[in-house]
Length: 578
Image 1 (cartoon, rainbow, N blue to C red):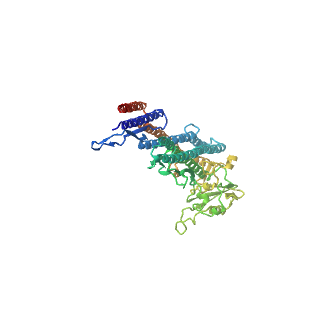
Image 2: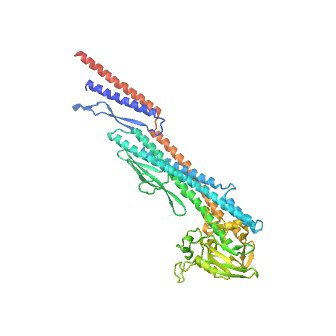
Image 3: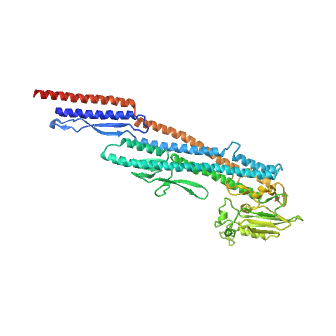
């Protein structure tokens, strides 16, 4: 071994220790930098010099690598936990807003308004309330349903607005990740590790995980393929992008996040976007569905009773509320081709109703039954709607009665008129056809958005039908009692629940979902904090450890410098003797 070789070995030690001091200093400087991963310098002995039979002798030290200390598996778990926590937080915020908009158990809520509505009918049956109060209470309930539905729609619109902004934000992050992929691949082609760029890219993925459920696959060239809900979105330097669209099945809106390139739906469940989608499509839309379903049944059930009721006197004229285009008037009421009837949230059944025509001067009453054939069986005994009852069949049956005239208005509404000196009423409608056609109705509309008291009842409450014909005799409070009893009547269309019970079940479900979101948020926070602590232990900077490294590198530097000094002194001595 020559003195020159000893000096070169000392120089390699100086270079390695200088680099080590720089790495430790950089770690200490970034100890509090968010997302920074501790860097570790790896040293390796330089290839030795052969001494023949004596073996080999070392040539010093070289720096083999400066790499981030990162656990890919731990980082992936942390991204998943952050996504779960963000989803729970977004879901909790939306459900809390929904709960606040309903104001249940405050006394100013839908349950109280329903109870007040039925209570007014009960008081009317006991002659404790006037027709005017009953009509006004119905209008108050209608307006309350308009307001509560508007508030729920407001929560939905707020969620939709947030979704649009978050998808835009996610696209920005995906673009940056794709750009960093390109930079990292270019830099690491020459073997150096782009540690700072990798840290920046991981921070972007962390931010993305708070928006969507994300996973990554690192390619051999150092690039990330980013998966959103299991679907590749970033492939190297290419971002396929995200988009959001609204789908409608006719009764509800559904927001769907898709790939921007081909419209492929992504089944998101994590991140803020996933949480908002869940709370919108399950919490908010289900509440709107329940409101509309309750409104439809309230309208139908009350109208079914009111249509066969009457006041102190019968009617001389009545115009239905449902406008039927000419092409649907001759189509069976139960046919899917009848667009007017098939679009309603309620429908008539096989049965019939009685028409009572009374001569005012003599009091004589003639009763005729109108059959409503909706059994879906033809006269030949085969399945089909060809021989079932249409709106025109009902009009013709009414028009064919003595002292009655029935026609369709220009708007397609069924209009019934009694001859001079006669009046009429209806009773025992087992088909619900009168309620569907809106004849002598109490409510107008079909959903919580358009429910209202019939216009001519509002202007003239004396038209309110509180009595009814029962077994050929007039019962003055028969209709009022029957409508009051709806409060405690289970309905097959609501799964056997009463109207109030059905709403109570929806409110209770919202409460359960909100509590579940709260518990889920608490649990995901604990998991995320635990994983962050593990990541900090694995990738974080320890000032004490780096201080020890600095001392070691200092000693290494001093030792290497001493080797060079001794080699120089020996060389000087050698030169002096020559």
